[in-house]
Amino acid sequence: MWVELMEVKNAYIAEAWKELFNAEGLAVRVVPLSEKWAEAGELEPRKLYVPQGKLHVAKEIMRKI
Image (cartoon, rainbow, N blue to C red; front, top):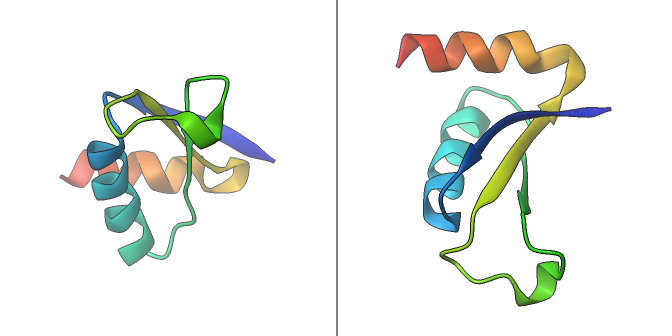
């Protein structure tokens, strides 16, 4: 199961966080907040999700930055 980690302002910030977490071996899903995902623009807000069992790992990575 996936749990919400954070909400960011746009796709560029979301991808930066995703790359950081992926470099640490953590899977991340980026989901646009708009209802139609296919039509979501790059400047629309996104939510980042991580596996439930890895939420503490993601928070620890964020604390170290």
